[in-house]
Image 1: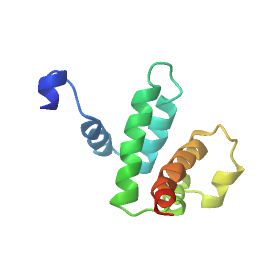
Image 2: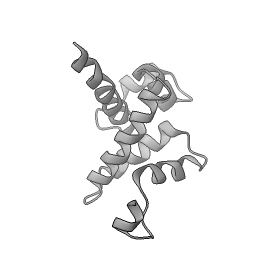
Image 3: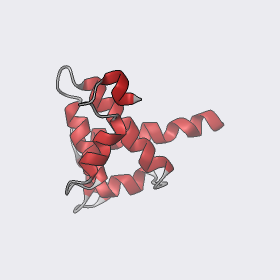
Length: 110
């Protein structure tokens, strides 16, 4: 149905994430790649949309709290290292986006 609407040579968001995941990048590193994509004019919406799908997968399938996801982002360094980075660093921005998305369902339950 997706290809019928958008064309045979197109990919859904999940197909793109799965394709990136088959590479040698761990999924949290893909989050960093997508965060960097958000900095390029014209690609912000694509990067944001794919990143939200990736984060949703980690929140609801892997049940990863922000600290767990952050440890994977910081690897091979410590989680605390992330907080010493500049506020514009893509790793910190990726963790920030993940944490905000993680907190959304919590806000609706209170």
